[in-house]
Structure formats: C-alpha cells, structure tokens
Amino acid sequence: MGSSLLCPSSSASILLRMKSQTQLGPRFSIPNLNRGKIERRNLFSSPSRVTSVRALLKGTQYARIGAESTGPIPAKELLGVVELAAKTGSEVVMEAVNKPRNIMFKQGKSDLVTETDKMSEASILKVVNGNFKDHLILGEEGGLLGDVASDYLWCIDPIDGTTNFAHGYPSFAVSVAVLFRGRPAAACVVEFVGGPMCWNTRTFSASAGGGTFCNGQKIQVSQTNKVEDSLLVTGFGYDHDDAWLANINLFKEFTDISRGVRRLGAAAVDMSHVALGISESYWEYRLKPWDVAAGVLIVEEAGGTVTCMDGEAFSVFDRSCLVSNGSIHGELLERIGPATKKLMKNGIDFSPWFKPEEYATDF
Ligand code: IPD
Ligand code: CA
Ligand code: CA
Image 1: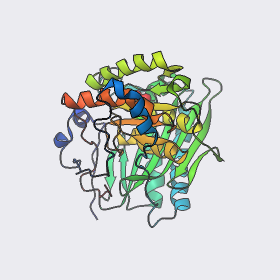
Image 2: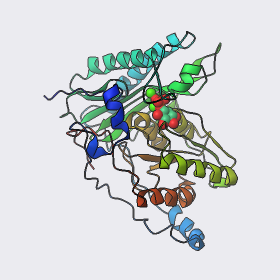
Image 3: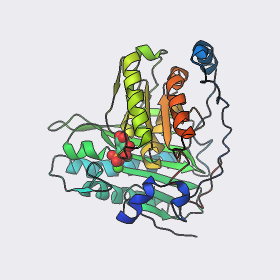
Image 4: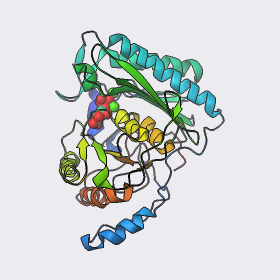
C-alpha cells in the first residue's frame, strides 16, 4: 500500500499550479487521454456555416463524464459518506461564518485562504479516513494523501468561494466528490445562502446514474433552448493569463447576446445552479479537480451536459470546463469553441493537471 503527501497550497507547491503538467513533479502526470473524443475540430472554421453547425451540434451526443458505477462500494453507502463529509465541513464553516476571519494569502493579493478552510478540510478528512482508510484523497489545502493504488480518489474543496466567505458575501460552498477510476461517482455541494444575520444552507447531491437532489428533492436542468433566452454564469481564476483575457472577451460577447452573464465566484455553486435550472450554463478556464469534481456530476445527473471549452470530452483534470442544460450547449460552443481553439493554437497549456501520477483511470 503506497502512501504519499503533497500540498498544492504550500508556498513551494503554489508555483506548481501555474506550470505545465510535465513540470509538476513525480506525483502528477499527463495521462495519455483517449476518451472517445467527439470529432468537431473543423466545425467552427467558417462563420457562414453557423446555421448548419448549430443543427449538427444539436444532434450531438456528448460523452458522459460520470463513472459507469460506484465500483464495489454500493452507491448508497458511498454517497452517504460523501454527504456526511460535506455536512461535517459545512458545520465548521457555519460555526465561523459570523466571526472575524483570519485571512492569509496564497499566490497573490486576491488568492485567499482562512483558518476555516483548513479546519473544514481537516474535519472532512476525518470522515473520509474514518470510513475508507485505503482511499486516495486530494484536498485543496492538504494535497494528496492515502493509497495511490486505490480506484477511489476524493476531491475536496473545503470552502469553494473563499473570497466570498472572507467578505461574508453569499455564494460559497463545501464541495466533496469521489471519483471511481477517474470519473465522478458521488458528489455533494453544501451551498451557503442568505447572508449576514440570515445564513442558511442547501445541499446538492448526486451519484452516478442516480440523479441529482437538492435538499432531498430531485432536480432537473432548465429546458431553455436558446442563448438569447438564457442566464449565463462564468468565472475568472487568480492567474490573469491569456485564457483569462479570452474569457473577458467571451463575457462581453455573451452579455450582448443573452439575458446576462453573472460572475458569482464559486464554481461548485455556479454548477449547482445550472443543475437547479436557475441558470443555463457556466464555464471557466483553469479550474482544478477540487473545484469541479462534485459540480460536474451534479449537473450531468440533473440532465445537463459537461465538456471542455473546445467541445472535447471532459475529465476533472482538464483545464477548461463548460457545463450547460444541454439544450444550448452547441450554441455556446459556436463562440466558446473557437476562442479556446485559438488559445490552443497559440500554445497556451491545456494539458491535464493535478492528476496523481500513479492513480489509475478508465480513460
Ligand atoms: C475559486 C472559485 C472561483 C473560481 C476560481 C476558483 P476557491 O475557488 O471557485 O469561483 O473563479 O477559479 O479557484 O479558491 O474559492 O476555492
Ligand atoms: Ca475552489
Ligand atoms: Ca477553496
């Protein structure tokens, strides 16, 4: 049984976040991804082909991102532990939400972490370890822990939307997911809603093939089928690189042609809102596995679609993510696809990241 520890948030490893996968050192690697990619490479080449491209994409079946099963552990048992872990973390956050914050900085002046992030993660780890001693765990604050030979990899974001949490601004969450052989198998996001004097939570959960639930009720994505009738959401990471700039332009473009584009500041919340049907899509470059692993399953199990921003099949180790209600996915990709392909053509790094090197996946 192999054991490893790597902390992506420690000062030495913060630099790793920005580097290509080949520079990430022995714990992370670029897998040879062969995920049954959907061939759409030339679909966006000519604007005059927009109508026929749209027709083509509407009929496209995008590859599923969820695991085929929860493996040898029954779905109910696995999801029960995921929910307990997220609930435990959220209790730590709720305890701190009205108190003064102890704010520290990671990469720069806008990349914050608080004592509560660390305490929440510690409480989640306790639940996971207490139930599955031999599983592999990737926590945003604590890094990689456990057995790399395990088929299960837990992806933990103890507070997604730390900046919002630090300011007492709604839109943050505790996000916990477990992958089976690289694909999300069970997920839970506890969203903090309300604000000072009226904090509350709502809980989203999903298991592969089992649907998505919010506070115990089954939920579905919206049926809106045009971007012009849609409310869209995006996000911007802490690195103000070329991908960040390209997304500023996408923000402008979609603001012009939709009912509006929001920027809430918590990826797991943004995705859960698509699952709930209160927004139609969310996209962002440079998200990490702990930002996305729970949210993407929550969207897919609510009937939505998840791909990379070039339209290719998605894994949680990819550096771009587009989720939608499915109906507008093709129309979104008419603009998001070419913008992303241009970045790729210009040599911007889109190789997978934060994949534990020896962790076995099905893709
Ligand atoms: C961040 C949030 C934010 C997104 C950033 C993430 P954090 O996570 O999800 O919405 O724009 O890219 O890093 O740092 O608050 O856990
Ligand atoms: Ca996050
Ligand atoms: Ca976080």
